Length: 167
Image (cartoon, rainbow, N blue to C red; front, side):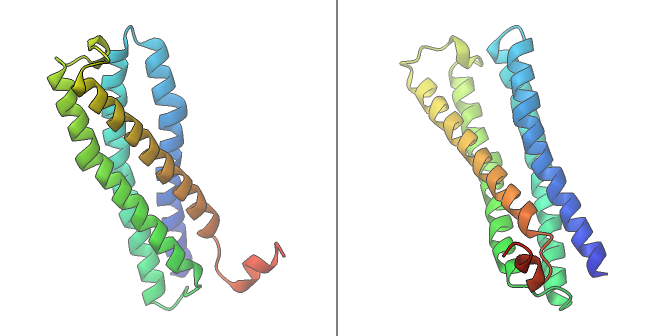
């Protein structure tokens, strides 16, 4: 049972982290290089990010559930699980914040600017606010990616000897 729980955790986390990497390296770059204008590319990126966040929140929930199940079953009580719980909760909170707060405020700014941010004056307060939120969104996604990579390193640790191999 412990092997199944560990495997499901790793699959969920891999989907989430892989999705972020694909989003950054694939979707955003391709959208902005191949679309006729930044507005169209932004619409594609926004929709993809919303989907990625939903996947991440589900994957984070799966990871959290099976980590707690491992702890509750006493099948895996390695101290690294506490660190994992803190990291995955942080990832879920940051993703939820981006999904439920940052993106809706960016949408409001976009609508205030007539729907196309790229046509707005850089001096416009809504444009400046949108740009700050866009920067925040990028930082949040970067932090979630780094935390996810750390979790991919920690997740396979099951016993003390896992650390001793590197000593």
